[in-house]
Length: 87
Image (cartoon, rainbow, N blue to C red; front, side, top):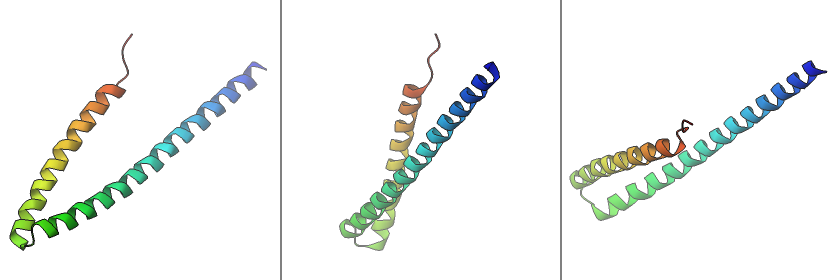
């Protein structure tokens, strides 16, 4: 009886972990889709604001640097918030 209970608990834990990971992957994919949409929108805006090819290239590099800095800051903040706290 005790063995069955342990097996059931293991199956429930495994099912929960699979569900959690799958949800994480789906959310990551949706985030990627949203990021690509924003990338397209911002690239189009750069083309409108900076119609010259040379200025557009500089603007794209500035955009890439700003986005990279923002993502690093957000990632660092999230990792601090989600970090398990020691008791």
